[in-house]
Amino acid sequence: MFRNFRTTAHRPATLDNKTHSAGLKTPALIGFSAVYVSSLLVLLFVFIISCAIDGVIHGGSTLFTSIWRPEEGHFGILPMLSATTALSVSSLLLGWCITLGVVSFIHGFGSRRVAACLHSLLRTMTAMPTVVYGFASVFLLAPVIRDALGGTGFSWLTATLLLALLITPTMSLTISGVVEQLMKESSVTAEALGFSRAEQFVYIALPAAKKWLFSAALLGFGRACGDTMIPTMLAGNAVQHPCLPSDAIRTLTAHIGLVMSSDVGGTAYYSLFVSGGILLIVCIAANLLFRFSVKAKMKKTDEMEI
Amino acid sequence: MKKFFAAVLFAAVFAGAAFAAPLDAFKGQKGKIDIAGGTAHIPVMKEAAKRIMTVNSDIRITVAGGGSGVGVKQVGEGLVEIGNTGRPLKEPEIQKYGLVSFPFAIDGVAVVVNPANKVSKLSFEQLIDIFTGKITDWKEVGGEAGAINLYVREDGSGTREVFTDKAIKKAVVSTKANVVNSNGAMKTAVGKDKRAIGYVGIGHIDKTVKAPKLAGMTATQENAASGKYTVVRDLFMNTKGKPSGLTALFIDYIYTPEGAQIIKDSGYIPVARKK
Image (cartoon, rainbow over all chains, first blue to last red; front, side, top):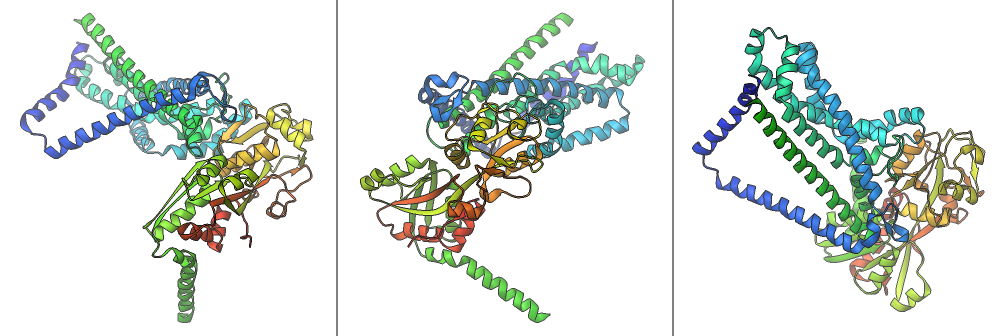
């Protein structure tokens, strides 16, 4: 029975596509723009990757070490890589848990009026420029962390908290949209069975939206490892591997921003393309990985239910 | 009342005319100036270039970094019209390429701490030990007990270069130091952190931070200009032979009051043209 809700959830989309392609011809201009944009994107990828390869050749053996000291010819970007990984994973974990809580509140457990307020708050938050978060946190959050943990207050933890805040609205709205649809479709059946709203959410909507929980996490991960402003302003930018939450760290994105502002040419400059290339590859790899795992999982569960 | 408005209007028009006057020299000119070299110069060069290109779109000015060495090499080999350096030219460089130097600004860097910090003076030795991570507590230099929080500027920053060369004598800064990417961000960080130490361009010192005496020297614009404060350097524009045409006009513009204002806004001390 529950499988049916999932399939009905996807049916409208496929129907739409069919009527669209049968009834309308794509205008030439739109086709042209599509080709133009995709070729630009492909060129961009090719450019970044080829520059990164160039960077590896120029930067040589020092690139994949842990010492960043350009004056002495050490261009190690490993600390930045580990910082990016640590920061995006930690903020994704935190953000995803908050997201799950928020979605549960909106569709299952909270009063409808408060839920509506929360929903519109989330919408507003998606449009918030990250520099605003960063700036406010320099004055409000960093001193609190400094007093609580010692250190400078510009740390892994500070950036994690803010990045989690940044990715929560996007993830919540993605999941919330799907859950809302599922709730509507299953409402008559659920009421007939005597389910409360909370039960309907937990036993029907949430399991059916499992795939979307994964893709929202993927979306959040992409934003978390790609964001530049928050790590630059709040993570402290010290070139060291993250060990404690109070450590200052420098992500690849912040590194690119910092070095680019004052350098052109030289190995330091080329190391930026390597950083950019790695960032691109990490994001693409995460994307593909999530897609494949979701696909495999869906297939498996579908087979089991049949 | 009418008279008053007329006066205000007149003053505004007059001020506008006076403000635009130095740029009049570029009217009817055409061509290209390439500038490369020291990174500390970039904000001044970029702003000047922007203003010139706004009034005359037939002039193209490109500004690149690369460092003082690149500046000397490129201007010497004729690849650019103006090569910037953050140090005086060396004798062999002048002889080899026949370069002419134009010092136009003084770049001074001051060590800053939080205004609540009791430490009011530091020696060069103490400063080096603090930034290399040997001294980690404020009580070791006469302050209240508490870990010292280091703040430095990003690689390639001109301010960082002066500080590293002149204040800590090229010592290697601790990797634990936090990195910020502008003088403004440095002031915010140090101004909010009671245990912080960092450095800013002298032009950026205000109430939010405190500059302790460094080896007995007070960091002020006057002392930097007179030579009483030593963590400074001159910024130079260099040309191959005597400048002519557009290049000469550009250099003249940097020495006008408007040019001096750009230099001040970038956080440096303008220097009058040497006759």
